[in-house]
Length: 252
Image (cartoon, rainbow, N blue to C red; front, side, top):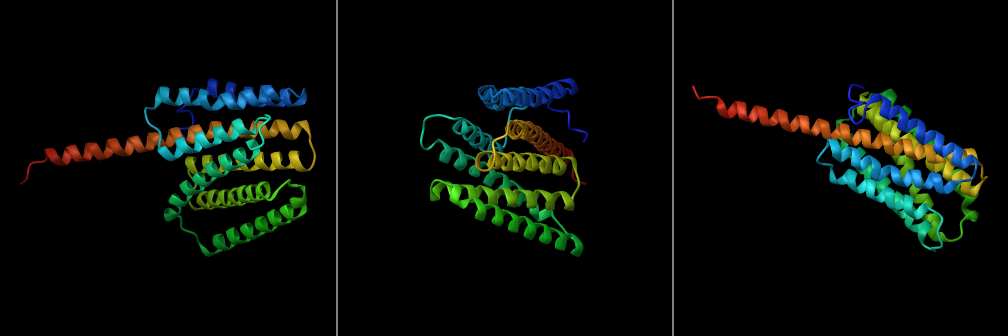
């Protein structure tokens, strides 16, 4: 991954990741959840400052993903507002739907052989069954049909995200496909831990790992966006150079 460290230096990346892990685990162990919430909320604007210090532009769809995810994080903070949980789930669903849209745009370059196609179909069927079984067992735990619908919708999007990211990775193993698969895994497992912690059993380690995976996913998402913008910039520069070269050529 040649461009892995383009956004920050090696030591800065190591320190930031270590702080995300340590702060979230320690604050969850001592039940200082306001600290972990503050860290995850401050991570997005902090990374935005770093990003725009090095890049002048960001694709609209990635900007929308970050805004929706940030709104989801804000609304997930415990407050005395009846619709906060619904707004949070709706914002996360919007962010995940846009991530699915990004991956769908890459499917036109995906080519599979017969064995890989059958493998992906089997993986999708198994995960679909497991998700269905999980929601059947916990559907009585939801307060109303709106929360159930939002949770099911988010679960379906997470399933689709994981399937598409894995499919794209199998079709072409590059630094960006590996990075995006890691991002999706972080968000998927973070939401699974959040689901488990809220409906099954509350455990500080689940809470700590959930916040850690969220922070790690967001950080890697910024790296992915930065690399994407760098590649777009390189393509534009190459096309401009070719255009100038062609215009300077004299007809024979």
